[in-house]
Image 1 (cartoon, rainbow, N blue to C red):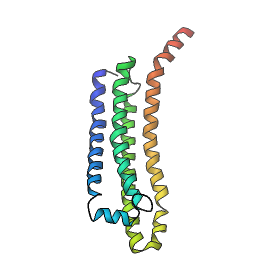
Image 2: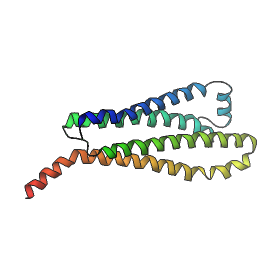
Image 3: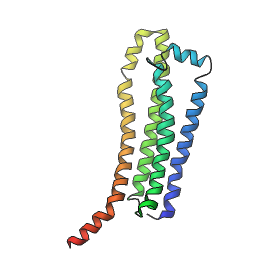
Image 4: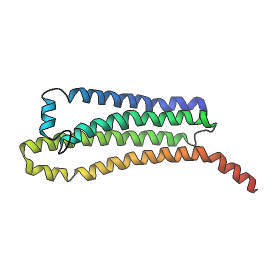
Length: 176
């Protein structure tokens, strides 16, 4: 891959990282304001029950995974060729990394917020229904996590192939 093409391909990672940090910052500011803070505490934030899905889980997820980890992935893709002298194995895998991880981040975050709000309201208004709704949480969040995992798999394969590709080619050339 041409080094000139690599940096523009990574801009989407940085823009999404910044967007996630912005969302996390806004959520952090909003969730400490009354009456939202009182509502979150009444449904168990930050320790248990539906409240913990919103604060700390969704808040931490959008900041750490969306904001920080996406940034780190972009920086590894950018700096690995400069530091190792080897090209990134696949530009397509860079795109797959981005899209799978981003869809996973957004769906995971949305699931945490949605279930936190729905189950929180049920806890306060109709506690018997909360367990029925919570039965869907595990399967839904598992699908979101699996989507994210596919993206990380693309990333790890791409990095591993980038590092060992030249070595494998060099070793094959000696075998004749």
